[in-house]
Image (cartoon, rainbow, N blue to C red; front, side):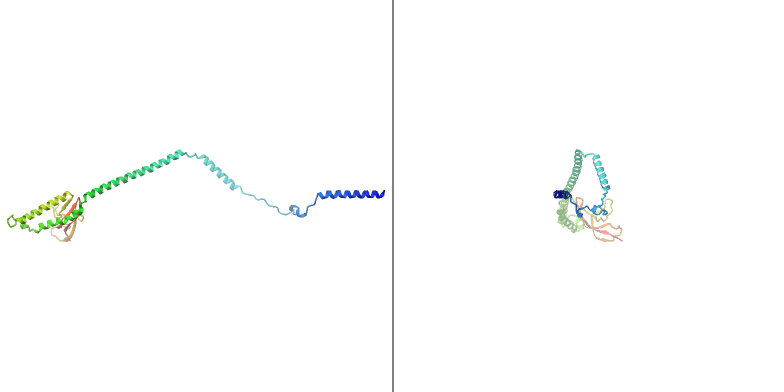
Length: 248
């Protein structure tokens, strides 16, 4: 009996030990490496929280809010008014171009008219210049005849000479009248003015070939005509060659 009781107690203790081992196996003790650092190192410094400034965000927000308020306060642009303004600018530009074109056309018209008048008035300029030597030859031929023979009475001896002189004068007059119809005129600086005074030297119309002293005359007066001058429609075609008085 006693042995059975001992056996039963031994079995009971074994069963109790097995139950305890099973219950304790469910709850495993963690290793020290798996423990939290705060528990292992209670005095270690933890991560410090960072603080961020909100001033820039606030300023940006206020600025964006003001811009939105300004845009909302400005009235929306009218497309019709914009198009009307563009058309007005286009009209101003077209009007300016039109005025300029009219002015250019008028200037061109005036210039063309002036060029046509000059071409018509001075078309015979080269031809007239070539005739000047022939006209001068008439003067030389008439001056070659002595004045005493020209003033003598017509006799059988000097009849041919006087007829020749008259023929030269008639031919010269006809030629000068014909050229005068086309605007060519001859002027003699040796002829006195309307008030009877001798003509003064004019550099625009005269060419001084020499200067000399002359008693009883003022400086600048024309005392001798070497060749007469010619005008073509008011323009000097050839200046007259003259001698001028210079006492000083």
